[in-house]
Length: 217
Image 1 (spheres, helix red, strand yellow):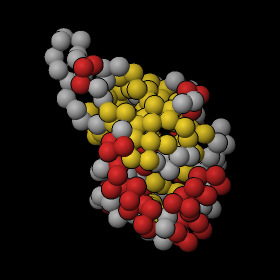
Image 2: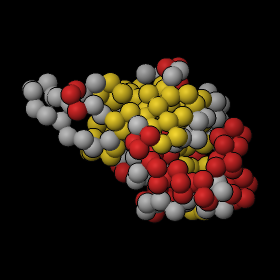
Image 3: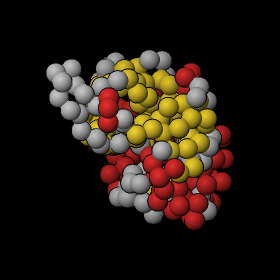
Image 4: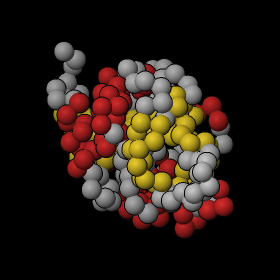
């Protein structure tokens, strides 16, 4: 049995994070999983989960007002760190959504799915937000993919996608209808656009992998 750890699921006042918290408790029953908005708890935690949903501007406003920004930046440097959905987008410099600045840990932008390109192979118009199950292509090996088959399906709900300036960050892509970034990784950090907590077996396996990842690639 592994040594018990403290896993902080960051709560900065946006959205219902219960599903993330419950999924983490399910895959890590031997660990302490805390849903917290306390920067000191985030700083002390052994690993950090940074979820997000809703409007980017509101998420950033709540994050900055909570005093969590500095603790999150430090955690992303020092311990295993998982960003989810808007929690991934906020790690980059800027979002087209209401022209919102992000945390800026990485160079790059979040772009809205362009209406002119949202056409399926059969000529049908594709909906935005991109919502539902889609395949993830593992374009780079990473411990987060352990025991997950390439092209496994994960659950998405988003209208914006990350375009990193450094393509070497990208470890997973999805097509809708063009290829976009579904997952990034760098040192101790991994972030995904999809919702692993809503993605059945593959999602729970990814969360399990995160809990057991030592932060090395």
